[in-house]
Image (cartoon, rainbow, N blue to C red; front, top):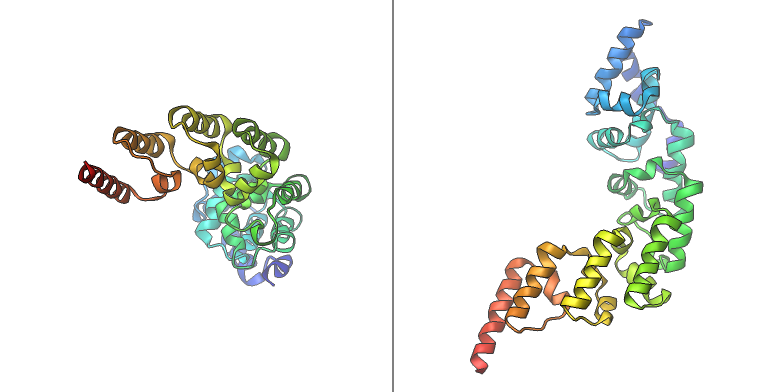
Amino acid sequence: MMIARCSLFPPPCFSAVRVRCFAGETSDTGILFREKLIYLQDLNVDPHKALRVNPSLRSAPISSVVSVETLLSSTGLSRPAVGRILDMFPDLLTSDPESEILPVLRFLSDEISISEQDIPKSISRCPRLLISSVDYQLRPALTFLKTLGFVGRDTITSRNTVLLVSNVERTLIPKIEYLEEGLGFNREEVAKMVVRSPALLTYSVDNNLVPKVEFFMEEMRGDVKELKRFPQYFSFSLERKIKPRHRLLKEHGILMPLSEMLKVSDGQFNNWLLELRLRSAERR
């Protein structure tokens, strides 16, 4: 399996040759530093940002940087994707691949059973995984998510590994508790909602959940049972989609389930609205 082969990095055909090419087997520290900057630029990593965020990079040998790229590339990530990740998180440039990055890859593979093909998707969607502790962050989050029902066919996948980087006490539990208190649901009902719509656990309570619940209850006069059936409601923009569509339906005295109101494209919605208005006119 590819993850198992990662422990053999860096392959001489990849990293050693590249290092010799950049370093030119020189001991001049100025030349070596410039070659390191060139190497970072070649990766599309901003050297100035990287050195500012990670001062240890200044004295790190280029071979250590190459070994990080080698490991990440071995998972199936493209070089541009690797560069984007390293530019986002410059601390990775001086990390120890064997003790800091490889445990994360093994966790994804062995404890979540994410396939070899999907591991690069997980990393691309949530690069923060690579700077998260398996023992203190990823495993505790996984344990909590399993208690909510993220098991079996609903287990964590490459599409929602972003949930693993959320702090259980400070982030996940407050969202669960708000949904219980704000909607009057019990833990089992909320758990079913978040398993159906995992993105619920990524939204801000103050900036997303609270205003959408208030609008639904106060302006739309909605029944909270509908939110239980359609938790995806929270994934739509309040200002750009929910309010405008509700206003149009209200103006024409039309009632429509949330799923029909929000899931369709603007073109389909406008066509449906026109058809409903024509039918209403014909009845008169």
